[in-house]
Length: 294
Image (cartoon, rainbow, N blue to C red; front, top):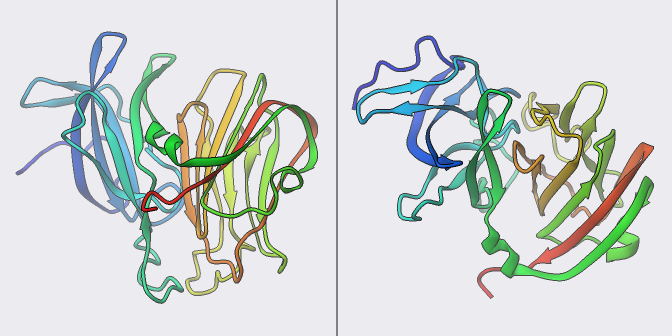
C-alpha cells in the first residue's frame, strides 16, 4: 500500500510506521483517527506514536489539523495498534519500549512488555478533536484489597500508611475539584525513586526516573519527561497503573497519557503524595490488581 499523506503534517524526526486508521463516534458524528508511529522523533526522545483526527471518504484521509499530537507523551509506548473485532470500541495496545535503548535494557529473560489495553475515545477541547486513552474497564475485575479515602489534604502524605507496603501491579486513582502542583513518589529502601506529577507553573505533567535505579546502561535513559496539559477544565483526575518496572499515567479523563519503564535494584514499596498548596483530594482509590492468569 502506498500513500502520499504526511508531507506537511505532524512530526518528521524519523521513520513513519505501523499506521492504523479507524472511526470513532463523538456526539453522533464520525471522526476518523490515523495513528502513525515514528522512530526517532518522539516528544521525549526516541520512539513514539502520533495521531491525526479528520475525515475519510473511503479513499482520502483529510486531517483537521497539521500540528503534532501524541497518543502517549511518555518515552515507552510505541508501535501500538487497535483490534478490529471489538464493535464500536477501539482498544489499543502498545509496546512498552523505546528503540533508543530497547536492545540494552538491563533484563535477563525478557525485553519490554505491553501497555495495559486502552479504550480510545474522542473529546473536543475548544475547536480541536482530541483522542483520549482509558484503561479498559475489564481491569476492574482484577481489583482487590481496595482502599477508598475521601477529602484528603495533600501536604506530605504517605499513602502506604493506609494501604500497607506497595505490592504490584496496582492502580491508584485521584479526583479533586481543582488541580494544583502535585508529586507522587514511588520509592524503595535504597533511596531509589520514580516521581510522577503535575507542574502548575508550566501546566504540564511529568515523570522523573533519574534516580530510579539502574539508569546508566544508555546515556539518554535517565531523564525528566514532560507532557502538556491540554484539558481546559479546572477539576483533576489522575490514574496510575503501577507495575514492577513501569508506570502508566492517565490524566484529565485520558487526554494526557504517559508511559515509562524503570529498573530499580529492589521493588518500590512506598507511595508518597506531596503538594505545597494543601491540595484537596476528594476521592482516592487504591487497588491491588490480581493476575489475569490465576
